[in-house]
Length: 104
Image (cartoon, rainbow, N blue to C red; front, side, top):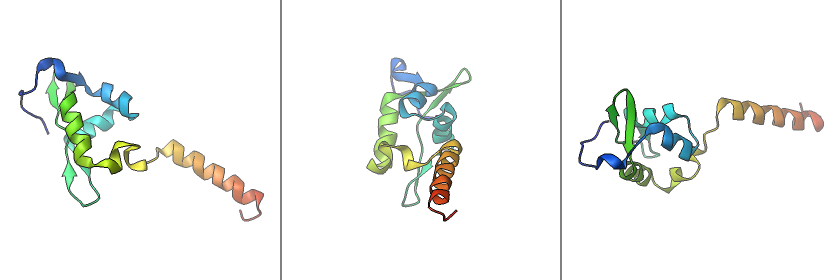
């Protein structure tokens, strides 16, 4: 959901900068802009972004507003959602534990 040009030009950074900061793929930042994030109460919060020259730009103040709107539950570890690789590793680890105790 694009925002107005009310913010200063120097305040904008490319979406991948925030991806690195939050430990998520740059496409996740794009998804936050275009689709938003559903909160526990069902409301959807969008990250304000600006599309320029084929890249998404996000203002530092917009990211602060976004994380604040999501609340403390999401500012730390971003939902606690694991990647497919993390889920697979955890499953393999748990499987080894079950085999070791004879339950697998």
